[in-house]
Each structure stands twice: as structure tokens, then as C-alpha cells.
Length: 230
View 1 (cartoon, rainbow, N blue to C red):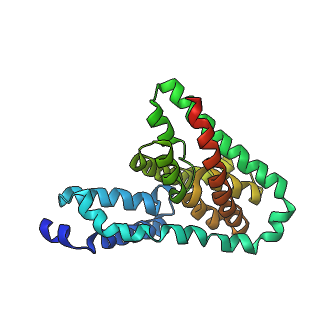
View 2: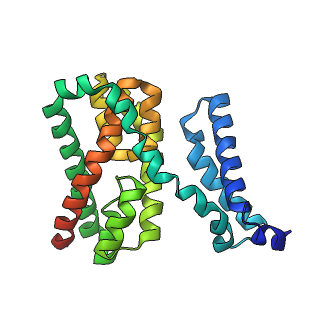
């Protein structure tokens, strides 16, 4: 069985898609944030690889084809933004200010954490792109000398965590403005958080989509500057 799975080029794609659909099924059935499809998929894939003793390289040999869809999927988020272009023009200053605040908060929190926990410079720059989409974050980490594989893991964890707790945070702090919700989720939890924003509403989804692109660009600039601070 192990040899068959390791030699199959479709194994990685198949197990990734099926486990993600399992997460979707659990989310629809139980309506609990903890059953985030991506989180369920990650846990299930790890379990399957351990049970069948399949090494990561064999799994990635097939799963890598899914990563080719990451960039076009991110670009497609421009569609809901275009549909809300009037709203964007109306609140342009507030939106840009909110995204800038989110990016600075992310970078400053990583700087503070690195100082408190005594992280190395390599670990520090690895974490700087944690709140932007993987397509951009990988390039930032590599350019700054970080550990790209860890950067990807941190980005996924950040997105899943934001997806899970986002709605609860809004209720806790009584945030009801759709634009504010979208900007907060998009600038903090990138594309994975945007999936939750789209569940909340069209405006939230559009603003979150905008935040992904703008926060990504600002983080590229900001991370390069912050890399020299520690």
C-alpha cells in the first residue's frame, strides 16, 4: 500500500481534496468554527501520512499541482471588490488607514515578540509576513533570508485562527460596520480569513479582498524596513 501511494502522482491531490471536502461537510453539519475546512484538511492529511508512513516529498509530488491555483484564486478576489467599487471610493481614506494600521500592528507585534522571546534574526524575518497571502509571503520570506516552509505554516495558522475567532471578536467588541469587519479580517487573516468575510456578507468579502492586495504590498515594503530593526 505504501509503495502504491508513494508512486501515485494523484495521491497528493486526491487526499488534499477529499479531506478538504470532509471539512466542508463537518462545517455544514455542526456549524462550529473549529471545523474549519482547511484546519480539518491539514489535520487529516497529517494523520493519513503518519498511518500509511508516506513521506512528505511523495505527498507533495502530487499536491504541488494544487498550489498552481493559488495565485489565480487570489486574483479572482478582485471580482467582489469591483462589485463594491462605489463603496470603496466613498470610504477610501478610512479603508486605507485601517489596512495600514493592520499591517503596522502585525509587524510591530512580531518585532515585540522576537525581542521578548529572544528569537534569532532568521526566525524574526520568517514570521514577518504572517498576515499576508502565501503567494506574497513566500517571496518576502525568501528575500529576507527567512525559512520559507515555516513561513507558509505560520501564514496558514494565522489565517485559520483569524477565520475561527473573527466573528467572535466582532461580537465581543461590538463591531457592526461591514467595512470595518472586512478590513480587519483581510488585513489580519488574508485569504483564509476572507472566506469567513464572504460568509458574513458581500461588503465584508469585498473589503477583505481589497485588504489582501493592499496589505500584501504594504507588508512587502514594511517587512523590508522592519527586517533591519532586529
